[in-house]
Length: 252
Image (cartoon, rainbow, N blue to C red; front, side, top):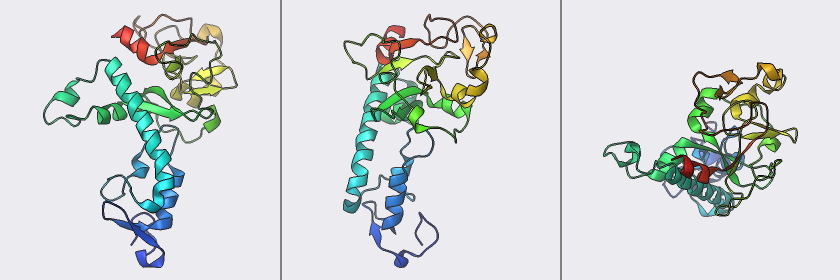
């Protein structure tokens, strides 16, 4: 039985043996890799062997695997850079013996940070922490054309970082104190949660918008400290956060 389709015996169609030793239908492997991940956030579990979770490897899959591998390396590089700039490359989760990510800062970074593919430039860009995505719930209905990085949606013409260029340019969500993921209507940046509830938050009267600190879905938070640790215009206005990694370096 093919452990991808669960519908036909391996003998019913051409099959291949991956480098890990497990055998699947060739067309099933192609289908899984072609469909890639589900939802807006980049994940790579689809490119792992369904049985042993080793990366899928086979010569006949090379054309499909190469762009996936290139994207993985790009996300990993950016996640590691952010981890170091946030001062978390020596976190207990990495340094403590027996910890889940002991000696694996790349694994820790990839698990912590959420990245998305820009519809325009096709590069991976940062969209906050994975835990924020989890708290916001699954996003089933979204338009890939609205996933646009800070550089490609730079409506305020933010100053280019002399060190990192526009690779890490980020925007604040218009309706809360979160890093934006979506860019809609050619004018508005949303985080995941606010985008999910955009019809309500976008129609809130100005006087009903929360002041900083503002949580996802335009929820008023207690206290005075902005979750982004910055001073910014009132909720409801577009604001470029600037270079994400340099901003974190200044914060920490």
